[in-house]
Length: 157
Image 1 (cartoon, rainbow, N blue to C red):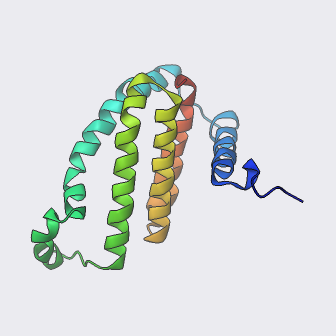
Image 2: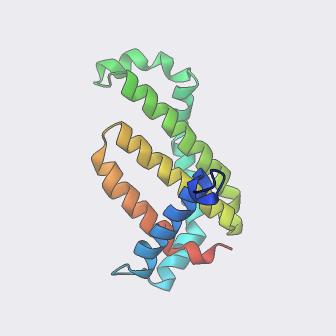
């Protein structure tokens, strides 16, 4: 009988198993690996790109805290219908933005903890895509994001 406190049944154990599975299929068994120069460019400029994208996502964060409520009637007229999907999407977007912001110092220092926070952000984004039925984002975005992330994993210590 398994110990209920064993690592294989905990969330951390499941994430570790998922990380190992991704490492197996996205690095070791991948039909194509990125060239070392491309990996170095991603590792060196990736944190800056993430920072720019975080700044660009600031309006979404402001919408979450209520400042965007002023624009909501105009957004509705423009075709955006607020409801459950919008609310769920905004909550998940906030979580992803926070995880990416927390990952930035580690990404600049090339630490494994920064890399792992970015891994969690991709997983949360995948759950968001699944819940909001964004199958393109789920399949293409998640696989592409994980592929690039795992290709550069070796650069983070």
